[in-house]
Image 1 (cartoon, rainbow, N blue to C red):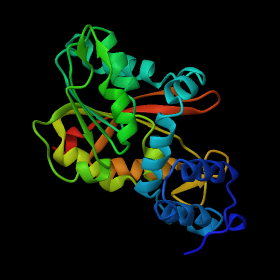
Image 2: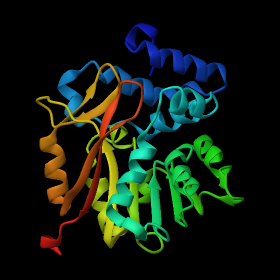
Image 3: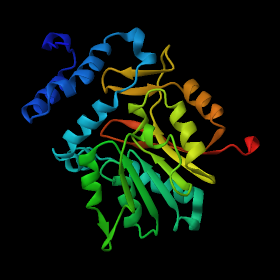
Image 4: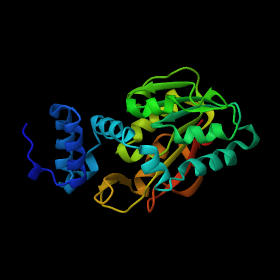
Length: 267
């Protein structure tokens, strides 16, 4: 398939794709991603499309080598890691130490690193599709110990399909669902294969109103979800909301941070 610039209406992605091509990323690798972006103009399709894993992988591999932590996390006043720690302390109280944590879409490890900096004795498994992000995460140390006990380079939708080791007390999905679209199956797999009986899922999500259950917002190119869709997912997954608080992901981008637990009435 031949792609011409006039077919792509997203200038920011054009700039990124040209940068990747100059850095020896093959054009055929970008084709499914460019095809995805052409569908963004078809608003009737918004409720049925998902980000291809190739897009997320290439995008974040590129960001990792272009100063992601400095340019995104620090410069844009990222605060989700602070809200995340406050939330798990709210849930676990003084029993925070010793938890088994699964950080899905962990990226460079900002959230888990902050947990370890607070002198918490935790076992943390990180999973991310971006090899370059995981390389940065693998270099993180607190008190001469690695932040992550395990790092796995895999699409989280594939990883969660089967169980892995012992169940986790805490599963983190911070700044992740906006790339998933319909995340119901992901949450079902997490609950079935990875979450302990008294464990919790900590996630961030952005809500909006639309005639679709979930849709891509033009300005930020991320999936936004209706409250109706979210509530139907947690009901179908036999989960309930224990706690929620607004948190700041970027300069002017706010999100809800939510704790989900297994619905005791469905046990």
